[in-house]
Length: 157
Image (cartoon, rainbow, N blue to C red; front, side):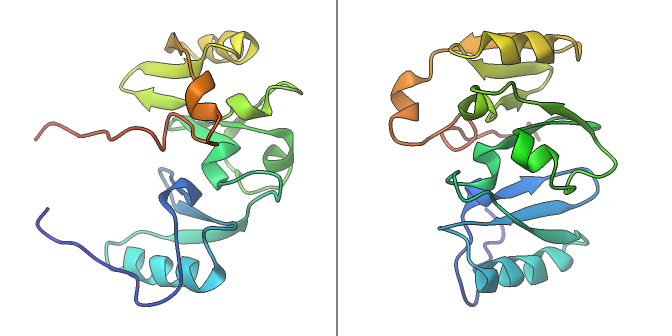
């Protein structure tokens, strides 16, 4: 990497950072504190990005445990996050009750990787026109991991 930046104080975990078209959401959690969120927001300003620090529901590990950006206009979110108002201006698809653990979906180009245990979520998302790929995720779920934290995505130069 040509440039690596470090927070000067606090802690911020990548699972609490959701890049959206108009802003970057930074969720406060057990792994991202207010000081770290503020430090990350200051770094993002250097790149012309606006950050919004938001509360993460206490029952989830990270912000992205409870939501995913589906496309430029659409977010998949648990009811708690959907009703919080943080996605103002976006179309929000609510995760069905009981399927909250399936809110972490990974977009790869026009494909959405969805946990195989969540067919109702796959059905909802198929209405967005994306190609759904169901993947087994029971093992990574045992360590509270999701598709977004268990993957590295690269853009071709």
